[in-house]
Each structure stands twice: as C-alpha cells, then as structure tokens.
Image 1 (cartoon, rainbow, N blue to C red):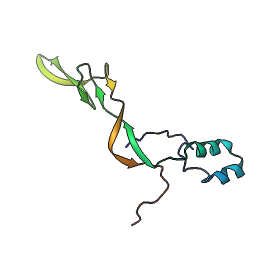
Image 2: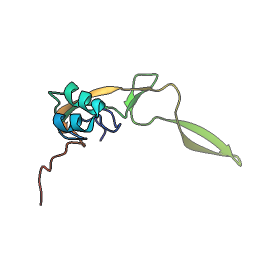
Image 3: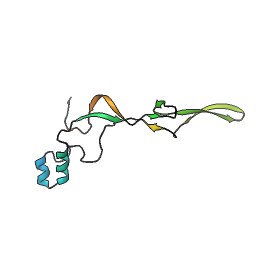
Length: 111
C-alpha cells in the first residue's frame, strides 16, 4: 500500500539520529533542519496515490481492454487487447481511515 510522502532516505522525521541534540553533535545540519521542520509530524497517512485510471468515457478502472475480432484460417476469433493510450490517472485520494506510516519506528504489537 503506497503512502503519501517520499521514499528518499531521511525524509521521515523519526529516522536518522533520533534527537535534535544528536544532530548538532554530529554536525549534520541537514538532519537538524529536517527534524525541526516537522515538529508536529504525525505517524498517520491520510492520502495515497491511486492505481486507477479514467478512460475517454470517464469510466474508472485499474485496466481497460477492447475486444477485437481476429480472422485466422477463415475462422473468426475474439481477442481482448489492453488499452494503454488516452488514460489519465485518478491522482491522490483521501483514505477513509488513516493508516500508520510504514517508516514509523515503534513496535505496535509483539507476539
């Protein structure tokens, strides 16, 4: 399941050195800036990128196919051909219930 955010290293405020003091000791100002820029960061994901597309008619689906008739040796056969052109992605959608971000560094349940 995809989440909103970047997969680049160090984007999530809880990854890395751990605290503002550790970042200043290491001299890593970039990490310090990231920790300070997300003071109210939440471990929840509220939006995600959809994997669905709209076609020319406005229909929404994961994949679109068109039926084609192929004549081989005098016999007609119907085949499905996948459509790749003229599809627009649905974009960012809001989740019904917030999910926990995959990079959240806390064990929620241990069996």
